[in-house]
Amino acid sequence: MKNLVSVVGLILLILGLAALVWLAQISWQAKTKIQTSSTPVVSTIQKLDSVTTTNIWATNPVSTSTDDKEEKTQTIEIFVFSSSSNLGDELTIECSEVIPLKRNIPWTGGDKLVYYQVVMAELLKGLTEQELNLGYVSYIPKRVELLSVIQAENGRYTADFSDSLNLITNPCTRRAIKSQVQSTLAHVPLQGKTLLGSMTINGQIINW
Image (tube, rainbow, N blue to C red):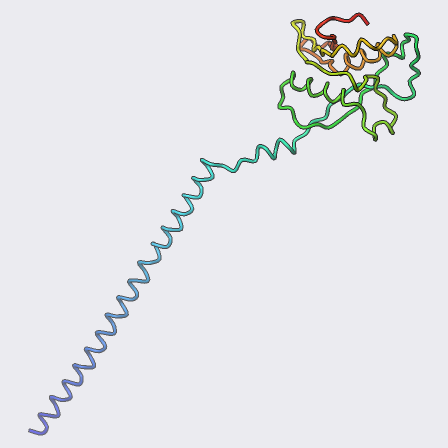
């Protein structure tokens, strides 16, 4: 009888140990399954975030056009005289011997009329101290006002000025101003021949 009790107790002990091992195995499998299934969820979230970000940049790109316009410049030429030019009261060939002066200005967008409007405004600004020190001279008075720049039917660009230009009576100075304006407004049309600009005063053609 005593031996039978011992055997039963041993069997119960073995069954208890087996049950513990089985429970531990089930717990480990469940934990492994949870970890495995969580990985693709994180991957999916990351993938969705990536797609969302890409779509935002595609439909609402950051606008840098303003900064690009501020940074983008172009080189222009206005026409002036050299300080070595001997311009007097009489009308000589030197009264029209202009030379180009380069300046950098903000990009005008490719519109030719806008370009020449800006270029003429630059010419009427006069010369900087540095340009004067380099020996450049302009004969256009600072009091002169630019009224408009248009392109005529013949293709020429024409600058219209205020009547303060009529106060200039020196023939050589008049020719010098006319040469500065004509050369600054000059362009090369499709025919390949340089077409000088022209000038008017209050819309009236001048005979300088």
